[in-house]
Image 1 (cartoon, rainbow, N blue to C red):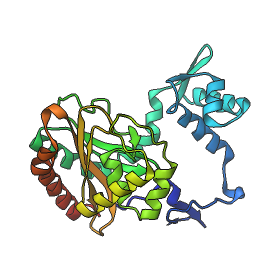
Image 2 (cartoon, rainbow, N blue to C red):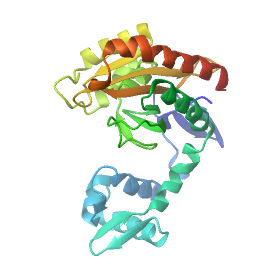
Image 3 (cartoon, rainbow, N blue to C red):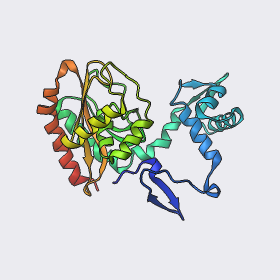
Image 4 (cartoon, helix red, strand yellow):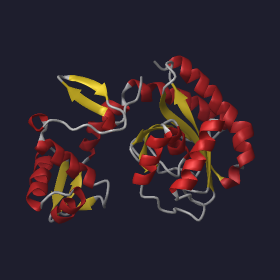
Length: 275
């Protein structure tokens, strides 16, 4: 299953075609402005607190207060949100909107492979896809350790400083990768985080050459992770998988000597499995 980024999908006479990195414009007659506003309101809850006022939703979504209010009341009417005094909060029903993707063939095919990998190495592992400047987790197999316990399918992290993200960015052309890095909010999450475009691009070159990415305390203190691309039967990079652990449980040497071979076994298996 080839993965297409959201900004690469274009509607032309009812058929979908890949448009590369350049976002295409939908004709005004085909655009549903109300639907776009509703999506912006839903996404606003991922940018702020769990409970937001109309004014906060308007600011985070870029809409005027009247439009934000109408969208919120519609979400409440459809049981996708609840209102409590001045505050609005999404309900678990909102998870249904992403269920069709998380139930699609790619996550389903990755889950058993991740479970076997986690059991083999005794560490948690994850799979993710690239969404512009972020990685979105689509599958995960956990072991009972402290690293990444808050991660789950649907979680997002920056691509520029994560092993999953660097593997997926490295799969793009250098120009396309640079555009995404330049568009990222490159904050130093720790004292080790690479934030300059030049340094990150140099690291992506290394990742392309060696075929994997190792992150050493760039996302959180005392955390290590190693990621590799997931290639389908046509040779396209459709996702990335990684293994994360606390520094007390291993070193870069363990990553390369013990965990990387297990990851590469999974990569070879998936290359024969994924369409």
